[in-house]
Length: 254
Image 1: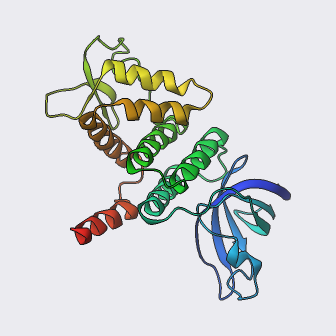
Image 2 (image 1 turned 120 degrees about the vertical axis):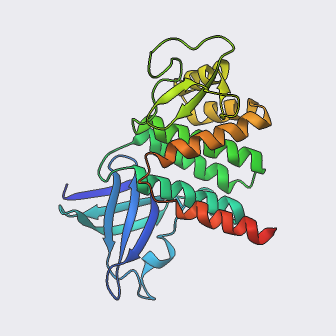
């Protein structure tokens, strides 16, 4: 891989490399997550300063063969503006998930498309319910695309079909299991089957979000709790910084 040009990408994070340069963690459509050094990006005259922003569609070019390659160019890809307020924090949360759960140089074009659609949804300024549904849908796509999420049309341990009118919980390192008690957050078998069918659609993110929106409010809250615990089991163990920040902001608002 000596030179790649005009590759769709997003900046997930960047950090200082030297007095004038930064390392960019970029998520690209065809090459996965990459570490790229942006030489001179901290200089006031650098065009990188106004382009290398998170949650913005880019086209980038890079070269080199090492673990950290050299960013040659970056240009804005057009489209929606950056999310603001709670939607901005949600975007940073999605970025942190990708940094934790996607290995470098492991292409995930389907996940990239879902990420782009999620960012666009967050930037559209819709109501909180739509944004929350988009986040739950993205979490599901991330888990399935990364190989963490088993089929949702059968019990994980026995591979038996889901029982009609049964309630099942998604448990980290166990998969989908019959809910052990009424206190365990769970969903009905019809809901899990609807999620599994949604993965087969041409636009799985939209289909998954539609299933989330159709859930009763208590079930939406239960799904959020189940996915949070499930993601925690595969995201490195340490608490997500964006979740901690969101909790602190909620306490401040109260």
